[in-house]
Length: 173
Image (tube, rainbow, N blue to C red; front, side, top):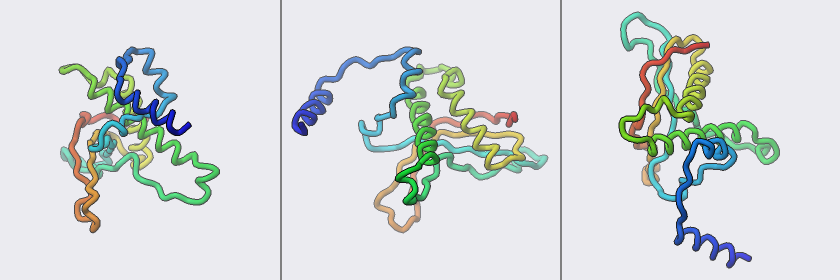
């Protein structure tokens, strides 16, 4: 049984079929996890948000960038009920799909027209209002993050490259 599974995996790696695309496929992909992380090791998309919470001068009152998907400590209860981690994983899956849509976007096309942009924008808005309820404006960034496994002292554990930064958006409640 294991040999048959290994043979099937080998066949799918050798003989690649056509890539299916279409607007109806977007609705189906929410049922399946994004397995693109198996294709290559490298940078991983991370979402960061910040809010404007006050001040009169331009660019004053901006908070630090906050990661939307920070790692969560595990507990023994997670074996039986793991709703919070499942929610965080589904949010990261959305960010992965948004990254894939950005990569497939034709040159010069507006990312705001993507369905995944609207969904990530809503996630960023909810995160901003949760972290800073008094925020009146917000921004979010999609960063490609590469962790450095050689740095065990924590001096510079992450190297990142910004893929997309939104303009300043209102915090509409």
